[in-house]
Image (spheres, rainbow, N blue to C red):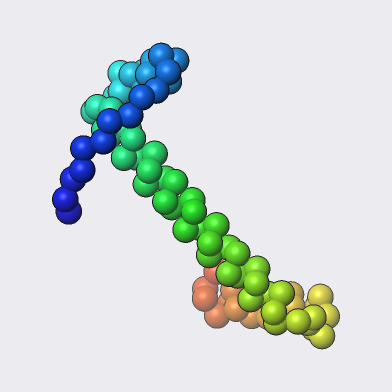
Length: 88
């Protein structure tokens, strides 16, 4: 993976925050801190996109004719099958 050097300008208060994060031992330097922020932002945006797709899928599927009891039974059956719910 190639690396690209970037120059950023931040206010003193933000610089103090970054330095405090490094001094806490969580990060070795400014670059590690900013790379972590970018990774988290990427993960967040990916999760948001996946959620939007799931919401669209749900809306596009239409109104269910299942009763609450039917849905609960399917969930219980699936949990038992996956071993996440005791059969006792």
